[in-house]
Image (tube, rainbow, N blue to C red; front, side):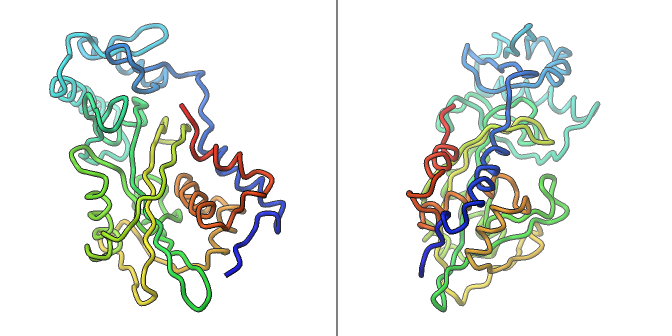
Length: 295
């Protein structure tokens, strides 16, 4: 099948780059680093930093930084102390989308120094992690992708279009095990089929969203599915699945904001890797580097 070259539609380049720009709109003004043992582990808004002044035994608010108190030195001490603060804030002013699911916090995913509630990640501005899987089908000489429509009940991006499978990466679970779990929960993909998913890429971005500062790394997987397989929304997080021609998917990314902002990036990465966006197109380098910026 002929891959669709971007040069066939020159106006499309700006739109693809718009998706990357939307996911990298963060500016330092109004934010200060979250420091732990002298290392920057997040970016906290001045407004949320003010709400942390109530907890001086946990957070030290400085003119240009938020610092975790020196007396908190162990993983468990930090996790428990921060959890108490966040629970208090949740009770007094609310934290949207509370999930009772912890995310690891550290300079790298492999070496966390504490955990925090997932809904607080964009408030403290720590790095978030997720796993996204593109499910695709080759049939009748064409190339198709399964696209999910997010439930209107979702805390973030309700009703937006999404990968077939995607979810946050909690503490205490491997990326591969999390992917297999999400495959079963979100799309009723049997374990033996889910295990065939291939790790292919990782993308990252920093942006300001309604929920706060997003500084995420997403592990990307591809799974080629048999034409006979039809996903089923198993956990209520998806309203419907649609099998879409890849050119229609690409057009949706280029020309609309119908897709959840980070899912658009995962699909753009897929389009590049599978040759639907080619290296001789004018903005290829900007697209590739925009999906993998160095922070």
